[in-house]
Length: 331
Image 1: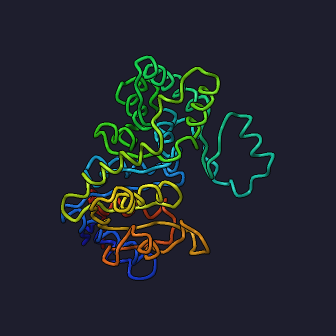
Image 2: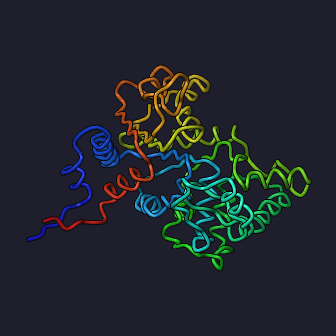
Image 3: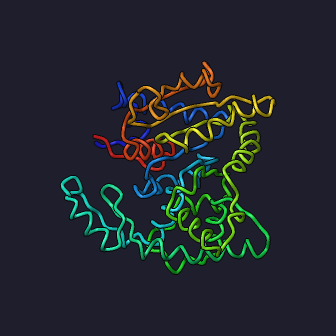
């Protein structure tokens, strides 16, 4: 006779040591943090949108399991690219055996490879570009300024992209974030395709740089959002995928409020990082969480977890366990 087991139950049954145990412990601590009334910030590096993390991340946002996001400009735009051009993406499972000539052929076909998949230029970049350019120009005409993510929220909520949808809207994490007006920071947004395109339009004097709010303004915005989100329950937690600016920028908000604003601030209530970066001299991505204690980003009492593994495997598993929306048949 078969009985049902949840994914969380599967974690308890199968994952006992090493990175498997770290994943299990971090998942249960994440749930405990939420159960105690805490909120969670997701810091997302890498190419997780192209890797279709939205299949589980959109549901996490929808079900109020994530309350703020820090991400790279690439992850921001690639969530929309997946929505409008999903059927036009190509997969390259044999990418490890490509020659330089193979990749040049991909370039000439108008595709931009991201490991084993590719973003189609015409169906993705060139579809979104004129629609968001219109928003930039409208802002300039009205003397208005917005953050990079707010322009994306505008084009998603306006319905102007709907006729171009190829992907499942329920899998677009940015669409779910827009519906909730989720607090978001996108540090270093210029380092993205549409960030480069915006810079080009500015250089050509078709739009003024001033229509885009800056990274400094993002930190000022985060001061207020952190204070608001950290009030309840066990505070605001920090769930980090990868390293780099999407992680370092938001975690600095706590010491900045404390030392630069000279205001009382509640410490982060939880910390977990999924990364395959090794601990090394000067490596932020590979630094152990307790190093952050010396920067007053975390405290000795913060629940801390590091999962040294592939985020494309670990993050969806953790999210599904937290969502608890599926059960499996067990003998």
